[in-house]
Image 1 (spheres, rainbow, N blue to C red):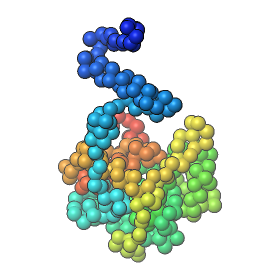
Image 2: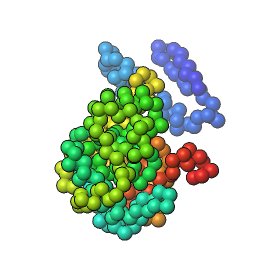
Image 3: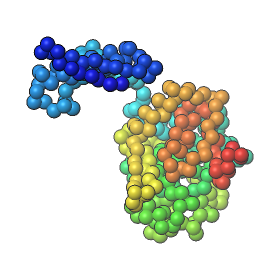
Image 4: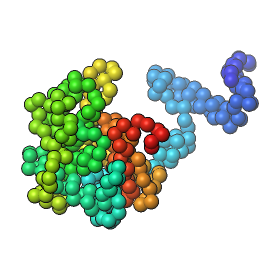
Length: 305
């Protein structure tokens, strides 16, 4: 593709020469029109900066900038994520919501367990805009813990047990979490000095005294849903937060694009310290599908999935 110009009879002429196997005529015509639009704008506003001059004419500007971008959708962005999951629980209470190894929980069972833990967290002083850490292996407790934190109006901060102790200690200090949910087997491995710890898999029916009703927490959609720390490849890890509104927007778009239903199962295999894990957790629970959590170790082995 080349542009040739020449002067003849006091006028400037220009011609575009192009390889027809790389470009079609309509594309070249459009390029030529853009060049003319730019030249006319330069004459009209000779003191304007180049990047401020228009290349599109009015019709093309309307089509590309306005018409093609009429993509607004009416998603329930005024509701926090846990309320949308609770609405799905009400629609399909007996459907299977969560599968892990030989365990399976219905939507009603998962919701009740998460509610009991949420009331426990509220009793421990957790509330809106607080951050709660969670350091667990892949398990039913992982999903219950995440959902309970949201139901308590807080945001979760995942602490991957496989991370080096130095990184975990830094994350605990930097995030300022005062409470971390853990499993008993991890208590000796994690550097949690000075942080309140709540063991999720302790013996007995320790949550039975707490209500299984949905907590009545006023969660603003702009509040944080989670804070996930970056890899730290450019320095120290940084906590990146995301709001309920942004998360609901993403999940509703995914449902519109891919349309999960009750016949679908979503395999959760991404470590919960990576943001891809977020839609793996919550998208199926918004739609009546099943969430299947891969066992520890097996999520890294393609032959086992």
